[in-house]
Image (cartoon, rainbow, N blue to C red; front, side):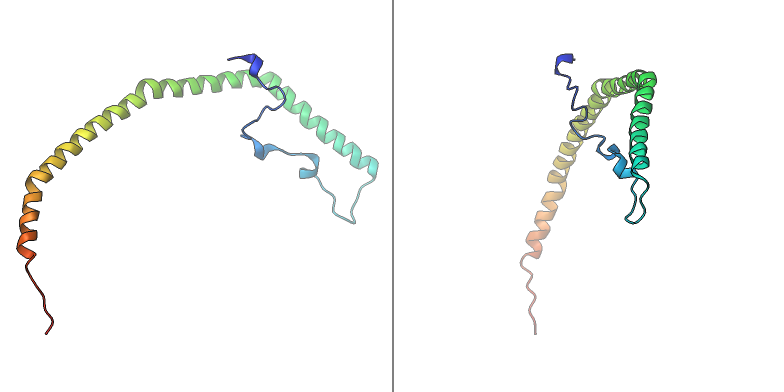
Length: 131
């Protein structure tokens, strides 16, 4: 991993957690005709913003690295399983299915196709006429 390429500004370039974007206006809103004092509204905004940021940073500080390690181990295990077990097993299955398909196709072409051709020739001369 090249840490020089790590974007420290845009940390969700693929919008994986787009549904988590919440601001004060998304959560708390006063309808027209029901407004608190301006100083309370500003203080509420400040408290919301600071508490949200502070709590997230504290949780990330204490748990983020350990959780990132757990997810790294999880995805390493998934990758290992796919590379060394799942993909080869699927490939073996496809090889066996291809063999079965060729065997069954040959049997059908050798046994059933001639019979079907004979019946088609027999019934091809039948004419149905309306009276």
